[in-house]
Image (cartoon, rainbow, N blue to C red; front, side, top):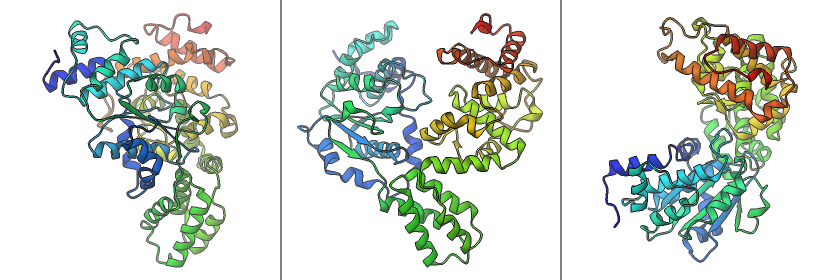
Length: 454
């Protein structure tokens, strides 16, 4: 007999199945979308067939180059499907998520989403909840099929940024083996030969999309000398040089919005607009390097910590302060020093920025050529401070009060970094060893025994 349970119990069961549903990034992406952009995707014949024709292939691949707008398109598609009364499950694979090591947690996240969107829960799932027994990997596909059977209409799964997932192909295969009730849309860079057999749509910002972005920026420019002829030149050049990459267009428009004081400035910048994402990032790092020693050092430390994907915004602020409330740096200052490469919460604005920073680090910060050493240098400064401050600072209302908890989390993350297989191959400099020894000496209760041999 099916279990008709209260909404409260149903949500408890859903959260028991998984503590994350991997769809939260979708809301952030929708907020980035400019009204009117990307509508061509849901009008594309291949998308319409995938959405409406149950005889068409179940999997649709939406591919595109970095910065083309794939993630925003995925969020828009999921929102479109949901707005027409469909059940939509979504997985946004972010390079900073640790959970993607096997398909198991993702399948659990999908089951959680499906339970949250279904009024009934099968007895097999309820029994596991009441007994405190989580479903095994082998049981998850059948449990998803059981819940899907309550729905007469097809169910849609949107998987974004499959290329950012370390187990992308394994994840895709696991989802494709689910019940035929599920129709799957995948976005990624054009790197997966395994998906070539499926119908596909190239995601590329249309000229109209980029014009909308340009007009949005132009509406904020109130210079008296900015006439319609010059605005049209700006539109034409941005569309031409963006080459279908929404991210590149936004970086180009940021240059125009930030650095113009007269008509000649506009013409000079239009002539030198970056033509690739790498060129745009190189220009941004040149600005970071030119902003002064203290701000450059702050950017270096922040970016190094951010590349580790281990620390949240509070952690990074606390680490940068070296445990000293008089050195607390507000988020706005941190973001300004990084010149738009980071967003809140403190993460890179795009996976391609992360890749560029990783691959060019020694060129970008030649005085600190080893990112890992930079993290340990900052950590060693924190280790030399008392374990907690006597009282929360009155200078910032959101300053963390449970300093012992936040410090425990930070220490755990440093332990993880030190124990990673990838880190073991890095040659330890004297600075690294000093940092590790400082942590070990100052935090014996944390459990650093054996770390010095890593």
